[in-house]
Length: 596
Ligand code: F6R
Image (cartoon, rainbow, N blue to C red; front, side, top):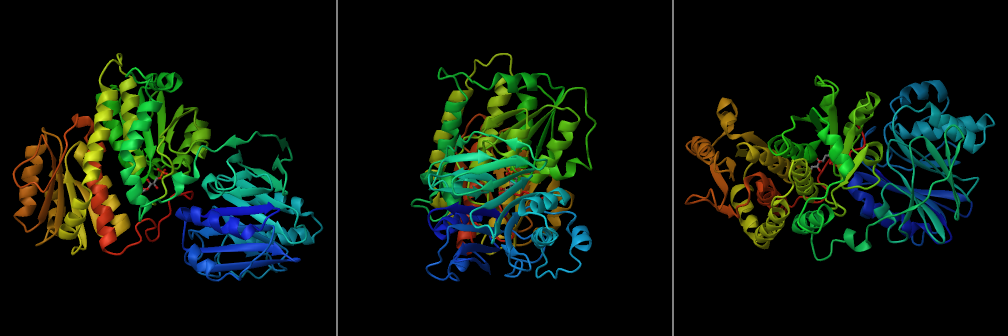
């Protein structure tokens, strides 16, 4: 949430900052800004809206060797020009960008800033004003920076320019992600390596409560307590081409199309080349000791977790619960003697999930993170990590990470069985082929979306058992990008209340991929059909009946979510496209939700 870029070096920083911000736009896009140092002053430009709106505001050329930039997802203060970052201190000496939430900013404001008029409604401005106030008492920039940081409660990733010392760029991090990029002629600071991967693939990871003084050729890292840190850079394994849209109009469609390749990539990462599953033995041993597995996740990852529970219980025989991360603290379950926590997170940065991890770690419970982001916070802080190998997911609506999570959970569950000599790897590779078969006919879903969804203000998805879990995900996809109010229901549950909402023409998508539940879901469909609903059946070669509008290939039933979610992703995509919505950047959302 919120994206930060910073640059200090020998070339002009403006291009670097803007390219980085464009790539970070998935993290928030309600306003954006940059500050550039040149000729003895810092020039700041900020604007409500997207990076393109900011670009339109910039003078050309805008030249400087030191600069910071920010793309915002508003937490404190409405998204407008005044609240956009960067924020400067009253004298203009300090200018900074911030990602995170300062919980005690009001307290700090009344303690330190009674005489400093604030110009925005943000928590961020308190930080920069406090640094200036402290520097006016005689503290050096470093001392004022450290003192201020040690007073902050909450999360922050910060990049700060001191106008009076333009050969340095100050950086700090706590809970919100931040990396230092090492170039031949520059140093950069970014929320995500994709922001400067065009310029370098060498990064240093920062840990919580660390500060950095960057110059154009050095990065000096210290803890807030003054301990010097030496840390080796790592090579970011993403390619510039992974983050380009290529021939696609939207990242979401590209990412839907990439799903067969992701399954194949998982097969190659998690098999031994001879058709047997190969999952890290330490993660396996950890899970085998569990008397109960607790899956913790949010949103789409939570929906993948619901499928994962089925695998861990039905295949591996380990009792499993799935928890919405933000609810865990209120509904902490009774824990047995050997609980194991499994965190599912595409980004590996989700604050709600991390909050649970931090608390459960304090209690000494083992943790495994399944994530797409190597080196992310959840990955670093867990005992074990299993990667999704899905490549960068840039559309805000998650697609390929969902199927990758399900595939990894399936492989994990299978690997826990006494014998792994089974057909899992072959089954998954057939699923990848069937995914392709569905995707090859994606235009069909444009016509279905137009016919069933466009005229309606709401839509229902019904299914039973595994199909119910997929319905929850299908409804989330549709609502988040097309703004059609959509809900997923267990087929049997509709008649207990929600059926009151069915009117003439209400779209109901009935998902039926399991032979055992097919007769029941067909009955539920009749209940809504007789009340005027327009029912769109999505069935498989095994469950199809005459008149079904969409039939997808069959596969082992436990794997069906990997296939059946694709029609729902495509329906959502085409509904949003037809409605003229911004598919990749739906309103009010951001991809990496780093605030609780
Ligand atoms: C929806 C979506 C979100 C995320 C959720 C958790 O399309 O992407 O619901 O799934 O914010 O994010 P991660 O998986 O990064 O923890």
